[in-house]
Length: 194
Image: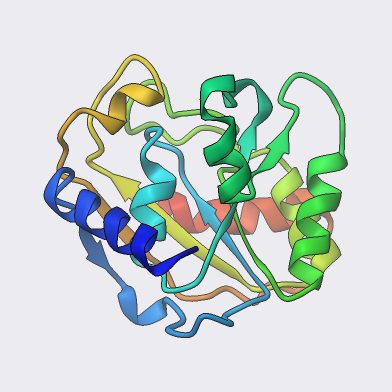
């Protein structure tokens, strides 16, 4: 990510969303912080920007293919989004994320698979997050978000003011287990934050 884009995101999240950060001591302060998987609860479409603003490293986000609108295709390509097919059992996105992580990259994932509805209610986590953690053998940086603006669409949160709080947890080094157990261990941290 270019420095100019990062400064724009920081300004936008600080001024428009009045974002407050907690646990910043857990966020690596180097551009080469990978391999690392950021696991984030999904409260609004603005979530990736709120998290990226606190990170000096570039995060490759996993995003539902159905959210990729044609008129923003250049932005998705620039952001190097990893497309997720939310309607089928296609494992292409998981394999791509594992490759990025094994190459030392940083990936961001929303294991709930969609925005929390009703607001503030943690949804079940898809076991794909545990599969990725185990297959890539990477540490996890858990991130809990609250206070984003209520909007009926994912895009609506980008133009509504909020008072977001983004809390970073300690980096988790999880022992190898089956995908469901790894996913449950990660979700337990989020349950403790709610």
